[in-house]
Image (tube, rainbow, N blue to C red):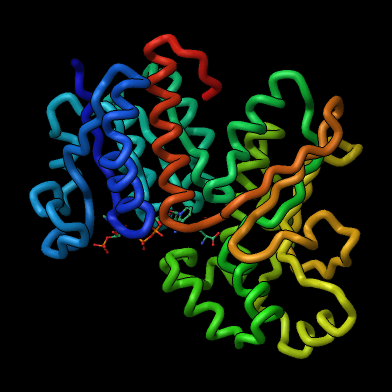
Length: 328
Ligand SMILES: NC(=O)C1=CN([C@@H]2O[C@H](COP(=O)(O)OP(=O)(O)OC[C@H]3O[C@@H](n4cnc5c(N)ncnc54)[C@H](OP(=O)(O)O)[C@@H]3O)[C@@H](O)[C@H]2O)C=CC1
Ligand SMILES: N[C@@H](CC=O)C(=O)O
């Protein structure tokens, strides 16, 4: 039976999750796809730190080592920031590897270009994990866009801040306590400023804008306000009034055809669809012409939800090559 060789770039929360799922589901994936998946290399900054027992022989800090793997077909990318992630994925695609990424900072800027390049090389780009962790918003939107138009998207796109707002309201935790726990649970970004300032939600919104409208608003025109602007008094007053703060990202095509977006805290009452969305959960509502409003919800961050959609992207890509019905 054929073996697909893959590499993982980054071996933190998400990279380790991919490794564990690939091992746990090895036999099942093989039975379903007809091929074995082998993780042949793992790229990190410090290869002397094993992180997961039995992986020392796979670790490298050289991307040349990764690209030199004989028969490499898939690159899972779970590192941070725009560079070197963009350059690494471009090189992988040029070498005719499929790529699967969780990196929205890189993908918000280069996603369209990488997908166009992949098309010319006959390979695929999986990016479900760039938006809303384990919530299948990309595949859902790709499917509905086959027939529907999407004119507006509104949602909670950051798990860390929704978790923090929930714990501060329900448990009276301080902002710092809630952030520390979100970091411990692997929800927060390597630099949590991206979460609390709204930048993480903004990058995810731009990925959704590309998909829904084929373009993004001018980044400078999008107002981005984080939860770091809320005071303890704001939260206490909201609670006393039976209201909840949600950190909401929205983008729409207006009547003039312009794409406009905004990211900011929103005070909502029990009648609002985002009111019950607590903890690390995200929710994305897509307003369409035929279906009406479709909302998907689920865990927006964390090792297994995120890594599992990346392995699903892999399975879709390989399934498509093998002639299965897939939507990627
Ligand atoms: N955590 C989550 O719930 C989610 C995360 N994501 C995205 O997934 C990506 C990874 O996140 P996460 O796993 O949480 O991050 P972590 O900080 O836990 O892990 C990052 C890993 O990337 C490695 N790394 C960073 N920069 C480089 C580099 N230049 N070259 C080689 N390796 C590098 C680090 O290596 P070393 O250990 O040696 O420093 C580390 O192993 C990010 O883009 C994030 O936005 C997306 C959805 C959810
Ligand atoms: N830090 C992000 C991780 C997933 O994208 C979040 O909390 O949503």
